[in-house]
Length: 227
Ligand code: SAH
Image (cartoon, rainbow, N blue to C red; front, side, top):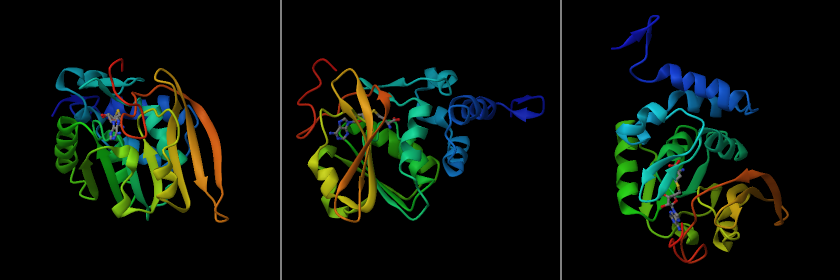
């Protein structure tokens, strides 16, 4: 074990605590359960070995296959926007590295996550298993269609930018459920939250500007040629 002032630094605990203080709490995230999850989940395990020293920096990072692990603040903001209490069943689109999946899994009852790239899905599965996060089902395929067999969901979190809101997500949302997704063009999006109200209406809010890799599929972008 590597120690600095009596603290174990071999597991990046100092970098992780600093990340939570400076990037999450200082920017106004006040959901204590989300803060605890971000303190606990070892983000460095979800990046390539050569990038581990950057795992807690204030940015997204490449994870191969032209995809990225989202910036810590974006992961925290999207998670907080779902107002999770612990009993929820959540659909996640774009497993990627599995980091957002791990944060969700530590906060809710079950996570259903869809990834279109097989290599990323299998890598994510391995890290989640290593962390004994067993309440996650990962499926390989086009997430723009949602996951009909497991619907309705208390929350749907989409980690890739979409040209508009795929209708299946609205159909697969529980009454009172929340959908968080980036909508815009390929370069820039706005993070949107949609709440399915009891009267059947959908209430839509804009949360912040963001930049995600494209959501590619039947109800998203057609291809990733210039992604
Ligand atoms: N939250 C992830 C973000 C990964 S980037 C992380 O922090 O690691 C977005 C992911 O969405 C990529 O892995 C990409 O392959 C995936 N993706 C894009 N379109 C998709 C689709 N239609 N269905 C499922 N996954 C998709």
